Length: 392
Image: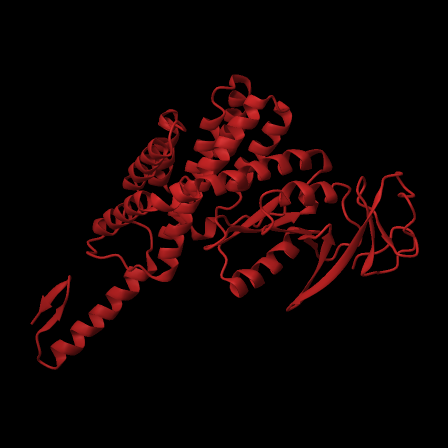
């Protein structure tokens, strides 16, 4: 629970220092902050309980867009975050968490409660943030893992997110209009795979539909993020800040791969999706030779370790190599051209995948079909299934 920086008492009505974000109850709110001398502004706190998670929402100058859970003292950059992130996107709610585990617990609750979606599956303790989306309103929650965020990187993150959210708003109509251009190639690639196993259909359950939706959303959001990164790079931002963020993106994407699931078709899709994302990020800063070479070296080291672990899957490695062999084709000149190249890369890579991976939906459906045929034949009747064929 939030506590006064002077007496450590909990409070609901008080003040906050606009310079260092220290909190003061009404008894200790004097003219200026007793720690840094900054000005004080009125602040109130509202508590929300969702199952086992309690979030305290800060209300500052009519803004109620920042919350915290299991945190007694706010980071010094809190007020700056509230002001910057609320600009032009007051619906976005930002929540501070002391660790990724706390963030994941809250995320599970609101994903179900509000029907939100999450493009990635970053569960590493090093994951700095999670962005959750509403179908109607777009970005709705930004969950920040304070354990993984250093104060020196927060200014860069704020700048990146404020620009990124503005891009989502600007490109919303374009993304909605052209989403089919991304969905169709994924469906064709998936059908080409099941054909290799002599299965004449795709079992499009909610899991498959949801995953294809996430892949489409990832490619769309990656385009916007890369536009922002190019802007920041050309703006003359510190090369070290940019490198730190890109290395973080590369390594946390590697950490999402589930080795135990390596023979599941959906995991193969996940690996190729993330590898394409990394290739796209590297292409976005290809004009900056020094940074580009540094990232290439980082990727090479991580990928060599990946190849050793996945050496029993040469087809998957060939598919990944194909993506990176052609990453120079990735362009950000127009969204249509970007989509054309991205879908071509992921489709060509998927055609390299051999018929060795488990696709549970099709397997279960075939078992049900075989049972249907058997029952009908035992009754002496001709058995026919639409799209499959008949036996009699």
